[in-house]
Image 1 (tube, rainbow, N blue to C red):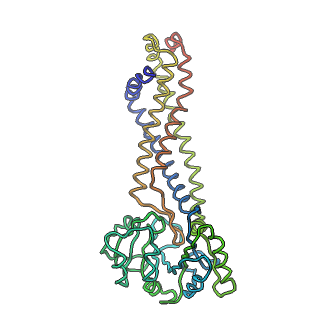
Image 2 (cartoon, one colour):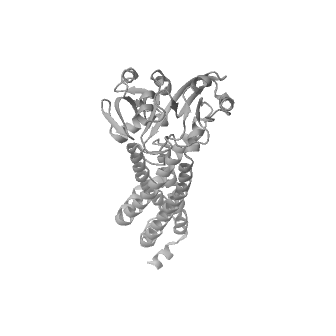
Image 3 (cartoon, helix red, strand yellow):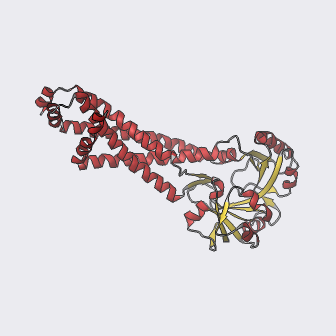
Length: 385
């Protein structure tokens, strides 16, 4: 084993001896892995935002057969009737106003909630550079999610305008919930008046319903829809993540298509490494003949070829995956449709998968050239010079 490891400096010197070829190969791998990791980050964000989990306890009550927030209008007095449904622990009426209802990377979403319901609506989050109490004493105040604040360069104390709404930033919300990270929370009456849809105390876009037991989600959802089935404003109730998945169906299809590009990027990585190794072996036939005269066996030379391919894949994978991670983390990107956000994940999962994939592909790409070199005897090497 020690003998196999002692050849690593020699392999690294062989890579450095051809700086242009090695550099171009690593750069090509990095570009391909950047694409792969970016797509995987999108897929991870979609999974996180749309897959219903066992512990979910939130339902979204929306107008039946309506999609964009501008078209969903429900009477605010539905609040009291929903609260009386068995299994419901809390109800928060919401007015939603967006700058763009279509799929976009930079949509500003305002959510209006009653003055006393903000703490319940953003439960699990922490307000920094301000407080909910400060938000409550000012009618035009907003609590802005950290991702939206970072994307727009907003800080507490600023005035912020978007989609025809101007607010005072009373604080920045830090939370792990992707929907809350990308929106601005404002007072419900203020948003109803500012958006000119329904007037204060009239209509809302949706109700967020907290259910006492997670296993009662479907039962409670069916009961709520049954309650309003014959009303002027029938409802459609779904778990929050399922609701996001329905609204973001176009985004999901787009990400699925992008997944094919990711597989193409992996194929490109394999081809780049294999091509670089084959060219390198052709240039080093004399070197391998000399190594054999010095006592290097065929299997040891084959091992050096595999190591070189693995190092190229690893270097390109680290540069590409690391660059993609930094771009996603610093960019705070989210895909928004119909006022709902699918945040591009900035975790270590996608870069780790990318680096491992590049390493494995490097090993596989170097396998065939390594076997060929291991089987080539010294006489054949000298005749090929």
